[in-house]
Length: 449
Image 1 (cartoon, rainbow, N blue to C red):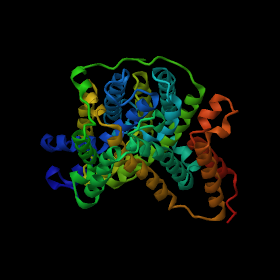
Image 2 (cartoon, rainbow, N blue to C red):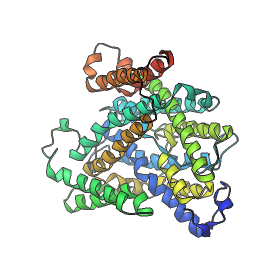
Image 3 (cartoon, rainbow, N blue to C red):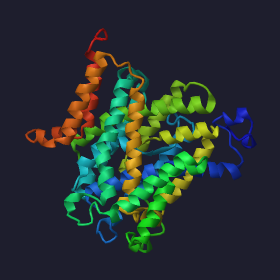
Image 4 (cartoon, one colour):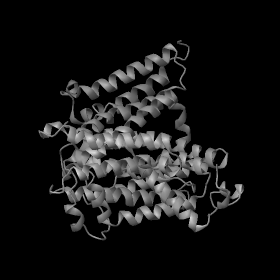
């Protein structure tokens, strides 16, 4: 229920209304806290997959700090594209942008073990995918027919399934191939389990801000336990600069067709997700349907935010669904509240010391958090699939798409004789599942039941 001391009911439903600053600033920071962990986690995962390492003694550790910085900085900038807008760009609604989990199944194999060299191709793909995403804004509404709950639910489920392995590996101490004897030990699992237990307790037995920031507080609890167990190293925090601007094309430029195709495909999925988020915001906060200009403007901002982030070494941005729920909960529709949160993110992104502090989080502590988050992605997919009429036609589409996608993900060797571009696209599991589901849904007759 909305707090009437913030303004009248009509004012609270107006995106252009600004509550008193004494309350608008905490509300803006609350939006940041709700999305903070989910926003920086993909950067940490991609950096880890590239081989930058989680220990402060790693020579590539500063690169991880930089990627964390960019995830904060360009989440803030992309959010300003949405809330303030420029011409047709931006929905001018309280939409919070952040780094998307959805792209991880494409990004992880694209950089796996390649260090800085792998990031040149990835960031070039992010820029091109962002431009493609921007173009989608001109006709995104006409794509919705090809993505009913059967397809979108399967895609979201596959995103979660592709990432669950990462969560377990991190909670156990990293990638077992490194040969660390501590992998899977109780010393590794203890902080991860603390994160999970505290997160669940806060989510279901508290209300308000404690419940909204449950994952963040759970990570802090796990971090404290890891510190007491001697697993936290602050070596790089003191050496990190107090201020550092972003660097254009920091990783270089490299055109990799597999990455570009994957990014463009995922841009379509991200655009459809944004349509849903915009609709959720206008319904939950203002009790109305989203306008065509709001939907197209939000998609333009998604694409522009992603392309600009890629130029400076950031990852793809999209609207954050958890903040949609926060608007419904607070009843405050003001875009200026979210603008204040975006400014806070930008300030954080320009201070490497903040990135260095975030990067001290041990991999097992992060694992506890992502187990919850990736599991929730799967649950969201199952929830979307609950809307499907499970006749024989839809069961066949789901069965074939899931079997092929998940099978190729589990047995990538099945494609060892394929060209490298094909292998990267298909072994993610997500792309073949999504493509099959879309094609079968379009060509199989509805009469089959």
